[in-house]
Length: 298
Image (cartoon, rainbow, N blue to C red):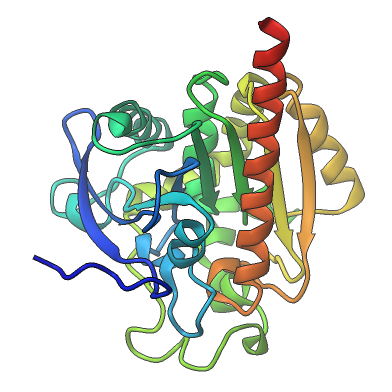
């Protein structure tokens, strides 16, 4: 048995397995050391990463699994279908829609194992954001507090050629941006939680603009979307932001923010703590909005 964590020590991160409608998903879990959780954060990584994306230890304070529990939230970072434990069973990966089904099934079972507090925030990056949007399109505010997305948009930053070819040629620089945005050690062996992207995800990525316009109008929870200052995959010019905002017509609140001094992989860079603090502040705003709505009903 693991010895209790000392007061003031870092929250204990442990590996867990979650049932997702018959599929077992691995992940990393960290809970508050003292007292029940105020709320529950489920985090979904991007393509070619794994759940460790949200637990970088290159510098103290950057990990979401360290920060969340210290502020009273339980954080579960899941390995999406095709990654971690499930990779051996679905080596080709799964379509966005199928991954969303698995995520919704996992969300339904969380309260049977852990205290979810006042509700669940779905926080997702890049390809994980596509899955989160698809999952949220069929969930309401009773099931989900809100949606916090980064590294995702609705239109790729290219206006020529085959979009799938653009994705394949995207390369290193679009994923990371300037090296100075990441602490030393990030790119050493074991420093970044990189995995091979399953083939199914590459094909799905090229179809995303069409999926987006079907999903966004169906989301009925508050949404916060963050673009890194050096985001190179997605359009985030004024016209693109206006289109994004208009698409979320059913969301009670939709906000777009920019994260200074950050590249596409925000949660692995120096700006990770700032981004995570803003995401948890958004969670608090979602909690407040729910409390006000419930008091009005009463």
